[in-house]
Length: 635
Image (tube, rainbow, N blue to C red):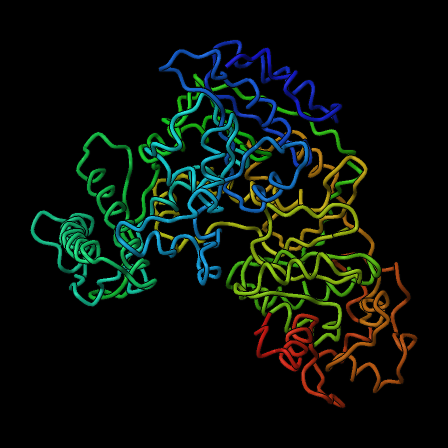
């Protein structure tokens, strides 16, 4: 790498915000002899452009000895981030490669077949006449031979040891804050009927009960894994010996090969007494039921899949909160790593936080607090009648309860929501809408670019603490790693706050509804970036309109429906029937909740036409009733 090329390689015609100073600091960090540079850059800093500048400093073929690696990799765990890179004209020399399942075969009669199930993988010795035009192999050839290759972190890790994607001079990892967690996820082994093709051919022990003398559950698991791997090898060899396979058999063979590799990796690490990895095993239902083998601190896994893939590294994120803790989690020595902090140049008044806390959202208090948050959301709808909003519900259980309660309050006509199956479709529909829809979402705190009028306000309903029922989380808390626990939650909050303010002239409001968020800010104060500390310190409690479903729907010219609408109409109809003192007089946490508009919210008197429908539900009905529904399916 030549650090002096970093600034000249910046791909944009001019710098924005603190980009020039950031690149100078990155250059100096490499010039000082650091092989790894962490770049802590706030949302909207243009991290992809910074990444491209660093990649441009990689050694080129004409400068290298035969044994020296050249070129650069760009990788990110977020598929949407890779999509953004692929569509950015300033990054057109980043050659994108995706997994085989993302490409369709071009052979006659196979156009609907993904490449990972095409004849070339179904038939032994198949000689494809159009392989040179195959979209997957074409993209792979280009990405492997050009100076810059871009891929998801999953594909990057899966190609470790590949002759095609060998070590390069520079590796840039964007959105790197969750690298340790992503590695844990990739290294986790799920043994269940859906993941083990020969499940019915093996007897799965109860690893707790069936452990022998001088064994624990992990030891018993290792013995079972050895037996399972042998069965998988035999089943795979039988399939490989066939001249031609069906698509189902191809999937079975590939999963067996993948599983053999996973089991072998676990056994190798389990037997390595010098490995730092701690393994935990979950099998809640006993014998002949699914079990999951999970690693903690998978530094050895990252060495093979990431750190051996390059000579210089740049890791970019807004939320690498503690340098030392991050380095320990990914197997790096903090003394050998430089941290570059990029200044936040967005005006503080454009990215305000508001305290509208309604109570605790812990499991035992949730049923009491969610109705209060729902009423708050109605008031926020009235505060933002013409602007789109995003509700971070944290879980599908909370989202479902919120949607149901908001329907009872009469504002379903402005809502959109999603399931795990239609998540992407509903998100794109909401983004494309010109109406001020409010989207109740789950796990959309990251990798979501809502610039401008795509979204002007959002609500964080719950402090996003990790699930303590997860064995890895429980194990760490047993060891007293509470700082890690609070950092993980704070990281998610900071990521969420960055969804609605994407440029210096953009603006958006973030409302905090869970009391535990304020407690989190106190507990994680030492790990909070200065620019976010400024947001927290500037937080205020806003004055909001009184509770009035009619005002909440004013921007879409609709009337409240369901029990709330029926109850409102029964006292005379029209928004003037409220007994409150008028909009703008109630604080976020106090007055307005006692207005007559809300006092009948739980009444079913006069309700007709069934339960109120959200926009998502109405769209689904339209698709179902459409003459081409049998062709389109449900979306």
